[in-house]
Amino acid sequence: MNEKKVTATFHPQAWDGNYAVDVKPEGNVKFDVTSDIERMGRVEAMSLADNSDESDMLAKSDSAPEWIRTWPSPFWVEVQGSVQAYLQ
Image (cartoon, one colour):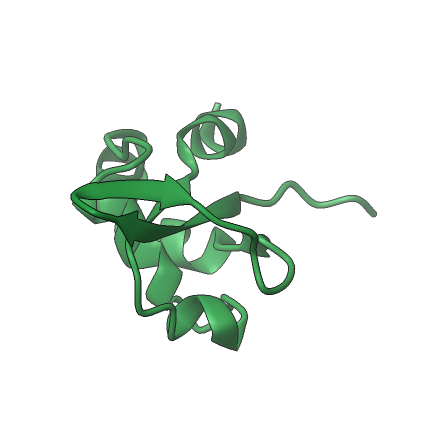
């Protein structure tokens, strides 16, 4: 059986002067956040926007690889499209 899942994509960055620039990831950038999204509830989950404080919190998910959970530099998380596909 093929279950639907919500996948987040982590975009690691580093500071270059005053600018956050994309850098090469240290591992897999995609991780399953289905349980995190289900705990939020439909209304809160559907309001998630990519590259927001709320979506960036998913980088601390237990399901995220350790290198993502401990990333020291700037980053952003992409999840909006996956959430909408999952909940519709």
